[in-house]
Image (cartoon, rainbow, N blue to C red; front, top):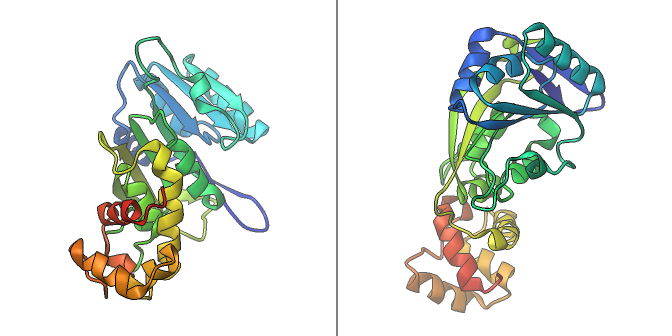
Length: 272
């Protein structure tokens, strides 16, 4: 399992501890009939743990030399239910590899060790409908903490709200830098995303919701009435009255609001 670190040079860090790899696979709750999309299999250490427990693995690896190593590892282990795709996971149509029928949408799960520098776009892609049943990502610890943060915390922000509006976010456990070879400069964490049966925003509303929340958090130190007056181009007095009518404190800060409250404000703003 490979960890890539953003920066001037692309670094590759490998996780091979069987115990940690099993815990990561366990977090996906794999079933014998599952189709699993694995992002960045690297040399194939996680793939080897995952493949015997599911029906099919589609492993997407951008680095051809690593894809070849993954294929050799699978061959040595006698694994035959893995399809290795040499491609950029951000550009590839993931759903094109999923089983389809006239009666249901694709059912699949996603797992992967996510490059630090493209964590957010990969999560956004994973949450593009039709959604997987489970997503388990190994990410930079700070990113995991931001995604799982509760309202009011220092790490709670637009990314937290955007993801929590459509998923239950669980930070399962941390993985120290020393578990990788070579050792990276940061710790990692295993994050599980479970799409909500009834998301707070519909797929057609997601882009507008993200823009609205991002605009609010760009003024996170200001009071809510001033934030919305600027974002919605309305008079502060009018905004204060509207907030009070909704049971929201006009003097509150954006970071104190739950995702559901941002949804209420978006609908009130008429910016959909």
